Amino acid sequence: MLHALEAQRPDIHRRWETLLRVEPVNTPLGQPEALKHMVDYTLDTLFGALRTPHARRRLVRSNGSCAAERSLCPCGRNPLLAYFVAGEQALLETLVFVQSDLPDTADHRTTALLELKQTLAHVAHREIETFCAVCQFRDQPAACAPHAAPPAHHPRPSHGSHVA
Image (cartoon, rainbow, N blue to C red):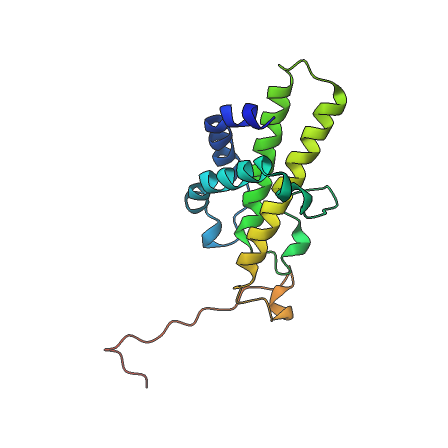
């Protein structure tokens, strides 16, 4: 599985970027032009974790729904949520594509799928938690409500202006 995915790396990267452009953007850091630069780093991290048996034993136990579990980010503003949703889709599409060309059993295909999903969940969990650790909304539950409006921006007077 790993070698097949690595061989498709340029296609995974292109697909991930394409999918980033259709994900909703909820912060300036969530712009596809900002996030696309992380794809190679994330693929390096993911492929490295897939190569390391020890890393596989320390996987995050997710509910299996998605690598970017929304419960990790209380305010939902973390741009990595959409980033990992797009990445997971690109990787799973590619895995299914490469598996269709391999004479493999259904059990092996299922095992590869679960291993990829769990390893990506581990990578996503670590990155999302790291970003959330510096979130300015982390300790403000009212600001974290999904329906709450972002705080209003009050422009500062310029140096030459007088306030009457």
